Length: 496
Image (cartoon, rainbow, N blue to C red; front, side, top):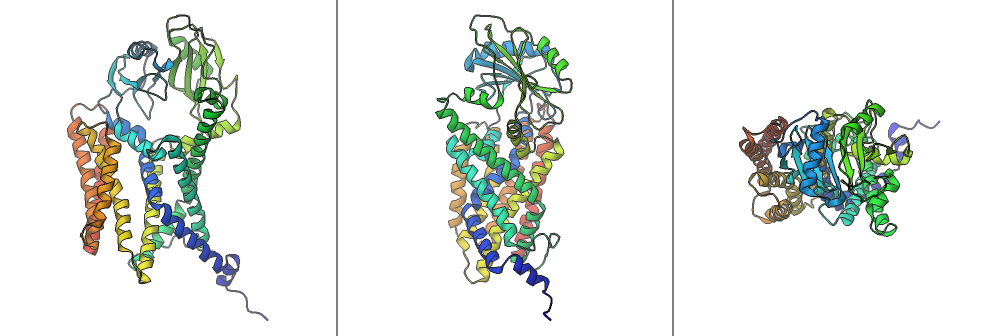
């Protein structure tokens, strides 16, 4: 009688050793090829989750509001139209909400904002909107500051590579789920990093796949949409957009007419959608008889944040979710941004997304550390590449903090230039004679120091004038992060 197969033998039949080895080899090669870009996109993405809070942090002196009256909206629209004129063919207001308690007026399209102002409760313009550090991080995450279409393509390909790494990581480790709670500490560096890499990869797998898939699909759609608008619609992006989200305005009539009061439109919206929260109001072709009023709202229990009613100047509804219901595909597409960034469940969801985003950065970094340790164990160390990765993993957080300090010094328009120069200097440090044992420690201390300087400089700049308590909450979080990194640097130095 044949002896029963052991568990190891059964697993071997399910995933042959040669297959596992090939997948692991491919996993390593792909990770080495794109790890720096994956890390950069993941790190910036973990911060961009809090983009609305960071915008408030950069301008904490703006009035904090919970609601505004129709009369304030009317006055605000008049003021922004007087300032911006008919630039862009539209004027709009963003109403206060829980995530962004600001009253913002925009001259031009909602996507533009060359004339974008924060207003007070009476609709008076207070100060221009300016959050250069947040804008820098958003653009870095979205397209790496490359030309838009090319940058979207690169980020999309990086998303595909990350998805391939996640799948190959599971296939390359047949026991990854069985050992989900194994975390060996105190042994070799390679085993510690391997356990950290595999455990975080296992626990965070649903989130990692969710954000990777939504980001990749969103990037691919924007890339295809840009190509479609440029070819089929001869560059008319607004016309192309109507094929997806429906009509954006009513009929065009250039005869002069006054901008109507918003009170009847807001009352009509309240009657039609009692549970809806109106997010913004846009007027296309203001002061003409063909002007249209679009009310963007968020429906209860819906992920899609781009629902709208369109009224003509007389108050007649020309388009709405009831008149022209969207297809399942369109609703799924419009749910991608809130799913990708965690903008659907309140502060707790954002914090979870931020922490899991940092976990994905740790998974990426530990994967590189495992490969370096394996090379050392094989007698083939690559110290120059280890220093390069240290400069990437710890240099970029330091550079982000430095870029955020610049606006506090009155430097608002040179974030990208500063990032390029500082990145070049960080990688130049790889060639210095600083001993390997303290190279990483020095970078950790630099991150902790710059983060502390950022928080303290922000407090000194806005103390006495800040009206938004979110500023102090974020400063506290930055100081706490600086303290944790300083502790890790001290332990690392003792270990060295």
